[in-house]
Structure formats: C-alpha cells, structure tokens
Image (cartoon, rainbow, N blue to C red; front, side, top):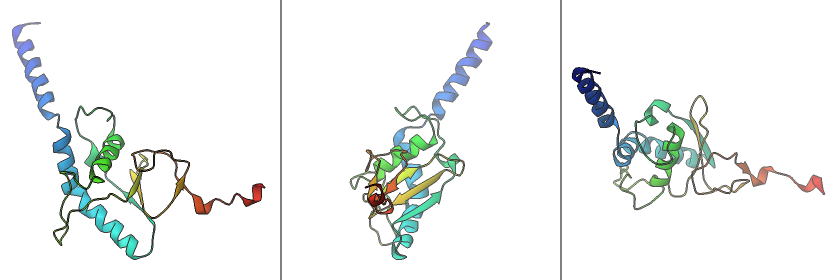
Length: 153
C-alpha cells in the first residue's frame, strides 16, 4: 500500500472514531427528545385509570455509534437509558412545564425490540415471572391478578 492510500485510510478511521458518541451525549439527546413525551403519555394514561401504556418509538432515534459496554443494539441502549432516567439524581432529567424534574422512578419498562419498537410502561401493577423487576429486561411480564390458579387444585 502506498503512502496516499495509507493516509486516506487513517483519515477514514479518524472520521469513524469521531462519530462515536459518549453515553452522556446520547442520554442528553434522548432525554431532550423523548422524556417529556413519555411522561405526558404516562400521565394521561394514569388520569384515565390505566396501569400500563404502550408506546411505539422510532428505532432510528436509539441507533447511535457508541462503545458503551453491554449495548449491542437500539433496545439495549433504550433499556440502559431507562435505568438512568429512573434515578431522581440523574443529570439527564428534563423539566416539565411547571419547572419540576421529570423522573420515571416508579415506572416499569419492557422494551420489546419488535418491528414497531414497542415499549410497555406500567405502574401500580404486580408482575410475576420476571426476576428483573426494577431493572432493564425483556422478560414476558404477566400480571398476577390475571392468573387464576384455583382451577389447578
């Protein structure tokens, strides 16, 4: 390989590295773009007496070039971001129109990673079959009140 090709390859490698974003940059972008919308959708569902809400998100919004450990795809990144925005002391919380920090600390999330990139948000509900409650997971969550085991006795 001649020196011109070598220099071009080095420049291309530098461009690739500079496209990689840090966790802080990504989480700030995600919070600014999505957190208020998610919060308002959940609030509306709560006012209507629901204990869960499904939202489809754009997978492209969670598709970043990054080297965050444990993040292999958009769903992994979304799950990690949810862990962060459940923390009341997070630097990535945004303010609502009343000036209060939005934190999803009492919200359970289940990122399906399906074609429509659906996420289930739930609150005030007990789940069985998931040992990851309160942590990011992709377990199938079954509500305890919906299971009638009396017929098995």
